[in-house]
Image 1 (cartoon, rainbow, N blue to C red):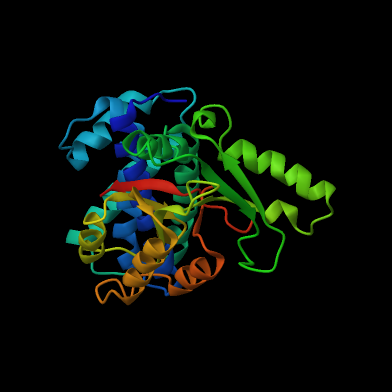
Image 2: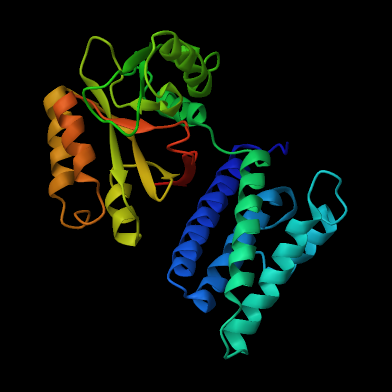
Length: 316
């Protein structure tokens, strides 16, 4: 396992999020038989993944040639780093240059599909080895900035395929427990409990962070489920301040400021639902369900039905 300090973790997490987005775009293009267009996205996915693995060896500005050279230098003969990922990066770089600047023919569908499969494995490898910003680190930063207002953090254990009228556990955690017991441990122990209670499909359950920050008072964080982001979305959310996480094909936003009062939180959620600049990006169902329940929940762990780990994308 690599070891990074927090700034490098943030950079590496952002790069992995970008790599995941590029791979998703490439796979969509492949499904639509747009193989030539998919190649650029496949290469940039590899480019971002490789940079996430080379954070100790790169500067602020890194050319494509410099990244590739360092990949060979650092991992070309590394015993724990599969050589096929080095070869994949090099091959996709050449293929991207060929089809961007020279070739006029369509690449082999079989070749593009095969390289996309290996790239998916490369991304999985990077997620396993690259230190990322953990949920605990995000919560610790929020607590440090709002310690007088935060009495608890809370998590729900729930089935992500069913939002209401289903078995749901709520776990309250004082802030000093953050370094002792995190969401992953909660997910493991909760599934054992759910299994003993004969809950169907207990392995599908995930842990979600809740917006409420006090067992006895209506104190909240702003939490939104977002389908996609662009500069206008980021500009709107930057006025609030917080963190964007890449979650599957969408994004999660966790605000860094505390909202005191249930009605104040509800007004803020409704304000975002009415926002014209965010209208086509927000998951309105998530807002409506959160308002009915009285708090919002955003997934922070995985299960077979939600296999992608939410990963830090950007601080706003």
